[in-house]
Length: 255
Image: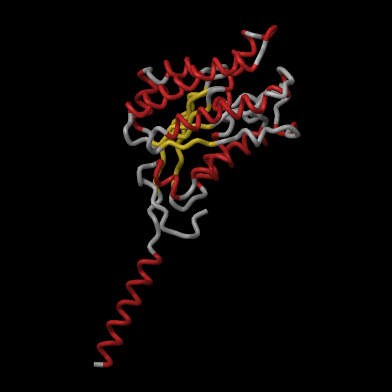
């Protein structure tokens, strides 16, 4: 009897050990990056796509990911109205349909448009009026992506404040960006497997070392910080949700 109890206990112990040491099978992750100059990588000295190569390295550091394969559709100057048309093109549709995650940087040029069109009489009301349309277009972009791929995860990156660097000095500038980002965050919250990433405090006042020589776009260090923020926001259980459980994090020590 004692021998039998010992055998059962040993088998139970072995089963527990085996379960604890099972390693995840590394998966390939297909990511489509769309949006504006932050995705194209204006200001990136390497010419390799802004935040994308830094994020690729971070993702591939995870035990659960073998290759993070990015397709980059970033285009300098893109606004939400233009991106909405682009995600409906056949080429982009095909890649979105095959993607595990779609990452979006958009909105900064919508803010710039308000400044340019109201330069001589710029008020906070101008931004509030445009913010309503911005929110509608963001929701339309997310809805279009979700229509093309029901399972894809979506990451919407917020905007940062360019005003103190190149356009205007106003006490309202921080509040304008905060409000626009809240609109983007609320839009993302309406969709499953959709995450909002805030970057506005990365490029706050006193962060001149993060800007390219045009004092508007990030430099290499700025893009690395964006990639770090995206990674820190989506790693772990969030990445499981975004990839619709394709990534399963079984190890406590995943990094």
